[in-house]
Image (cartoon, rainbow, N blue to C red; front, side, top):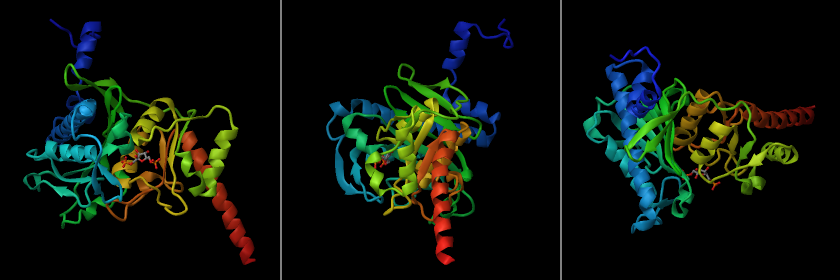
Length: 355
Ligand code: FBP
């Protein structure tokens, strides 16, 4: 007779771990088998299925016709669309059809939210996602990712999805998938950050890291220094500082998810600042910066737009952008201190000019 209180022996421990799938872990996190908990567990299960389908396509892309390259279209972001962007976007829509779970899907690749009529109004959840993050890496087989967030629909939707234009604290879950040497899914339901690794032999995401904590400081700074001359002086000051101080190392993969994954485990800071021409920067708030801010804050880190936390930024439109400074709390605070210093100097100059 097995005594459940007895510590699991090695065999049983690995068996128990092997059985800790994503959907089961969500129920454990929510400490409930309620209808809502079952729905969220099912939603995470479907995100896992989308990730498996995309990982399979990426792993064989080089051997298949018509999978890599561009479609010739320009998306709502003004960017050239990759064939993998379209495939991955459709995968996320397909896995939620006939689910009764998600009524709306809002994506980097779609100007307006996509409604799944058979899921509305019963499905009160909205999935916001970037189907392929790091698109510039896709055709050269370097790591890419998917980013997702789940929000609850508030009130009736008149077709504008205006209830989505709220700050990131309205997210009830968020995470990313990293398509790297192994495929990993990292998520949070607001109760810590947990990572799963896809076991191809099982076809299941299995728990590999639980309650991940980001170091308070790390050596990595991750930024596209090619934009140096387009930045505000404050950001240039920070980069000059890391150039002049021991203990810093530059890492920039071209895929936000890959850079955030490194910083989550090793510490450091990722920056995509605004530029003089585009002060709001490049990255999108609702399906890139806010989901990652939710995750990193849950891991004990910080995410800033420069003068306020990313999770407090209210989008003025579905594809709103925001500057991003994210990672270890000491490093994010250090970058902010350069911005505050410049703002203080500017205020002093303005005051002096008024006298
Ligand atoms: P996509 O979602 O279109 O790939 O854009 C986001 C992104 O590729 C991030 O993953 C990455 O950090 C950044 O843009 C790279 O931008 P840049 O080439 O300007 O450095």
